[in-house]
Image 1 (cartoon, helix red, strand yellow):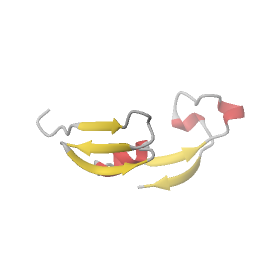
Image 2 (cartoon, helix red, strand yellow; image 1 turned 180 degrees about the horizontal axis):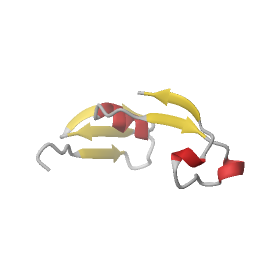
Image 3 (tube, helix red, strand yellow; image 1 turned 90 degrees about the vertical axis):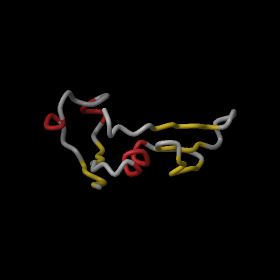
Amino acid sequence: MENQKHIALVSNEDGDWACLYIDGVKVKEGHSIRPSDVLEALGLNYTQATYDSEEHGNGAETLTDMDLTWVYEY
């Protein structure tokens, strides 16, 4: 893909510090890099929700199969 960006996650030896690079340029750093950090840096829209793990274990096969509590929408 021509417009595909290169993403690199780099951490120090003991895993105490991490950096997120997009196309070789540092866009985020800290003690951890979350999936939402990557999505935001790429400018992608996303939603984040929580679910009852007692009822759905590791998650249902589709979003419509779960009673979700939406906590964030970007």
